[in-house]
Length: 342
Image (tube, rainbow, N blue to C red; front, side, top):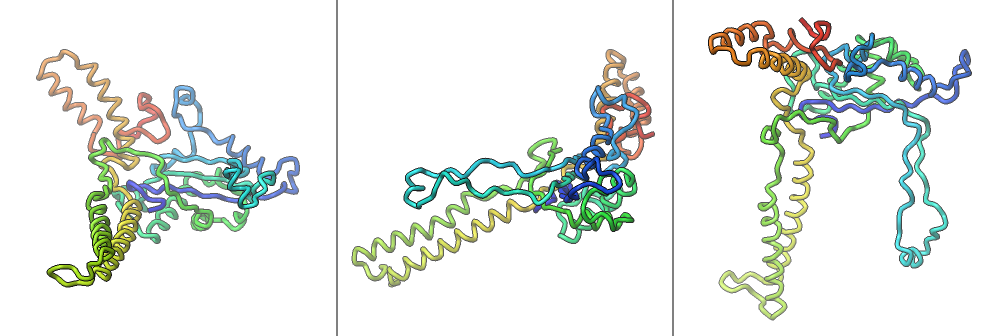
């Protein structure tokens, strides 16, 4: 299913950037203004080189973003002309000295990609599947959350795009992003701890092959008998011609159904993993780091002291509570108290 997999919405939007430049600032085009606004966005504290920056990414202000990316798409990439065998081109009278038509965009586009928990309320469990209206509501809820947490940055960026003039509220922004929405068919991540948990939708390949090949083979065999002069099948008395054609027709129908089943099976979204939502991921990062320190600090202690220390660890870090004593979004480490949600 496009846009949804493993309990996450994989969002892609394309907003056309205005042509020309604003009258009050003709020295910078709208496209350049978008690029400047994007360049001014602070990055997340996601590496040793950035973790001490004063400001964090505005996308780190909510707990739904697993990934977010914005960039300007000037035009589509030209991959070269379609190749053709010279002899075949000669036969078809194709002049290979004339270039093929090249696809071009009608304007530069602001591309926004995000991977978010497919929820409408904080704390909701990740869904396995959603209808189209439910997906639209999840996207709208996420857009409203963005408007609440980074309205200033969004206005600075999207004010250079067509159609944004009417956006005044969170609902307006949700409707605007919905108009810019493009279906996404490739997920961005995989949090599965093991492939056994993934619950992949495996095809019963042998069953499908046997189901299709059996009537086709039977039909071919019966038609061979008909070609050798056998007009009716022994014992049952059926016409060999009618039986052979009927069996082949049945095989073709089963082949079409098998192909449709395989496509439908591939479109089904995978179920979310056990700890796939962002609060669980942040909590896991926090526990991983602090338990590593606990492990080092308690090397060689007695069983009694280890038991007591582990009890204190559980009480202090609350492994079952995803809302407190957890790492904040957009940071690489929870070593600093400022990076921890108390």
